[in-house]
Length: 152
Picture 1 (cartoon, one colour):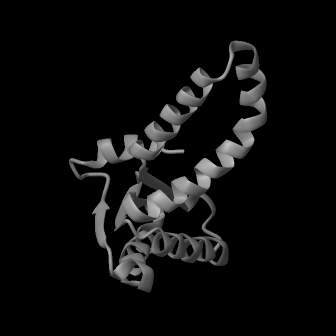
Picture 2 (tube, helix red, strand yellow):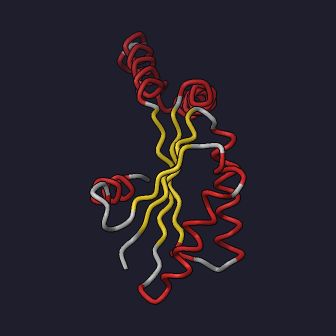
Picture 3 (cartoon, helix red, strand yellow):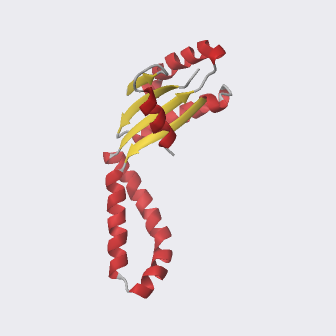
């Protein structure tokens, strides 16, 4: 049986999304689900990345040509650390977080699949958010499957 997907839109609530991830990881380990339950996040963070790239280009253009290479190596870990921290703050305020869960049960595990499809949206961190179930025969399945494979 092909995969089924659960998509939860947490909006800008990164903390609630991380609580949901923690709960899913606990279930995955406790019930020995292994590769039957896979989790990926989709975050809208185009603006913070563009701003960080613009800052790096601006800083590189201000330095002399010989110092740009040396300065970039020395400053990039520090600057990268600051970018991640500021990026997380910006994600909390403006980023949109979607949690995509892939359930990959075989044909003889139909009952287990149905139980997980019923259980996950009914639990606490998932109740308050918009949920969508995409099964293998839905028209959106191909795009959802492609999106899931593209996410890191």
